[in-house]
Picture 1: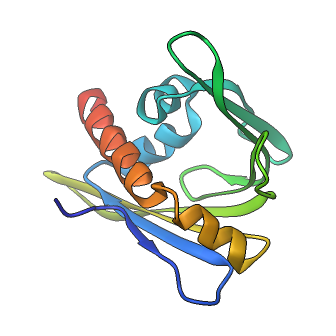
Picture 2: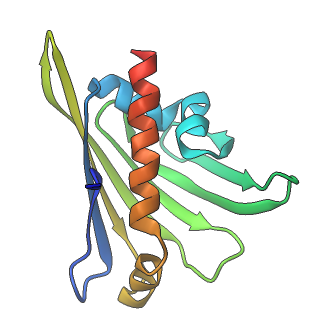
Picture 3: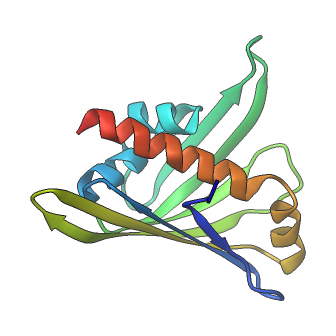
Length: 159
């Protein structure tokens, strides 16, 4: 099955470029990244904090069925322009990975009566090429594609 979320990593660069087109209006795509109840459903994680504003913070946590924390991440939102962009840091807690810088851009592709398409572009910058490559060795591309598929399905129900 073709992955709809494209992950591009150029050799020798400290970044990953991620793009995905969705069959949903721009406003709903942006909400899927900023409304805690929606984020929790498509990311499969608990939103402990999500302050959508300049200098706001965020923190997500995932637990196993026994309630043990298996993943926790946090960051600071540096730029927040509704329906356009979010610039934030991303730090995986309790790992050797240093903080990443993420630029998320949201764009409307079409908005006619029977088609609402929008695009998410993410640029993730890592401290080094080695850290970027270490992340790419994990099932990162598969995971983000699966999460974006859940986002598309969830928002289709909300429309």
